[in-house]
Image (cartoon, rainbow over all chains, first blue to last red; front, side, top):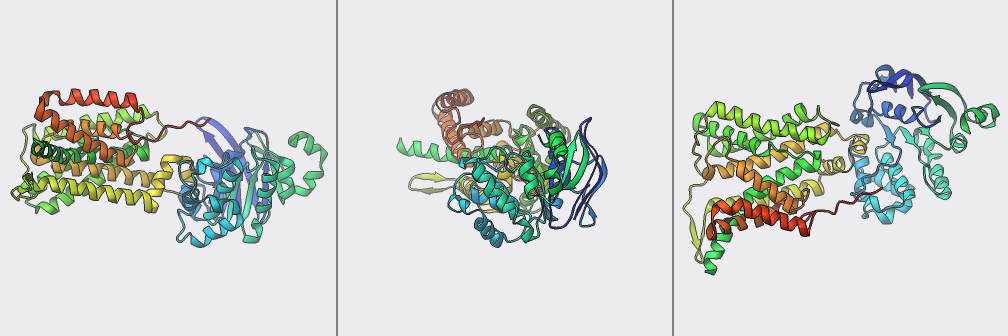
Length: 230
Length: 292
């Protein structure tokens, strides 16, 4: 479904990604692990068109999307749910959700579906997003991403700063995405958690892929655990 | 005396509607792009020259000429956004502001060069004699100005409150990064906001032209009052811009009538300082909340 081939990304003159290759099969959850500053968020930004790769190709459904702008990429069903939630604080929950379907036609059906998934948002539709709790904001961010009818969802640190109960709830939702033909690229600080839900994992450090392996093998590997997962 | 006061207030409201329209344009541009457009008046003035050329040199019917000038204003705004400000995306806000200052001087200079600085007359769009209602003299031009302000104000409120484009603009204001992640074509939406803002400046300038005449600096005073009206209303609030503009128009007209026109600008600035001293966010401004 998605294939990165030797992707290089620069921030000005600083090179952040150095020839990254990665593949996400249809309907799978792929975890991207690595320390802070390894380039994980940069990779997501390159895929979603926020950053333009200086070299390499990003193939989605057989088409090179690495030179498209973010609007065209969203329209193809690649949706990026960013780190730190990035809701629109001064807009209502309803407006936030509707913005998620900006490039889609009639948001009605998807809107009901999202409210069905995140029931907690239902009574808060008229409330400003900035007044929600951290967990509710994360639900809103994911719900907003779902409004874009994703085929591939790029999820950046969905558990960051949230209470364990809410993390569990959110990951239960994520684990059901494959039923709706949504593939997931998951960036997660909490590697143990990520590996529990992922089919496959890549480890990134200093802008390069160090290894990739099936998630269940990785879970049991002490060497990897001590070297990369802490 | 009451009659006289009412008459002055009425004329003040009509004059204030020009300040309000100018302020609305400033606020639309500022809300979307956070750029204070110092070329605002000059851009409206440039559009007025389009109307002037269409009417007096190409003999286009007046209503058609106005439509043409307003369309030209929209395009001018969108082009300036795309050519100048899009390139400066991410530059310090001061840089962007200086660019609009440069554009202000550029436009006044170029139009001065092309048409000279002699004021050129522009006939009022509607040549109907004033009517007297209950002892008050109503000038058709004043009624048209106020009606246009109301109509455009309502249209803007509907745009921001009930359309996808308006919601997109508000999203860009709130969080440009997230807006891009939603697939909002940020450049195109900002271009539209600039086009709309300059369109409002052009409406004000064209309405002002019969009184000010068409000159390169015809908008200089009006745009300053437009700025004051926007600040008074709490730079960012549409309602504030309208109310601020109308109040200002009445105050300025009172000063003209009872004191001296030369004093108007200084007294208005004094009042502005006073208002901001009591309410730093203006009359309708949202309190600037900073979250850590």
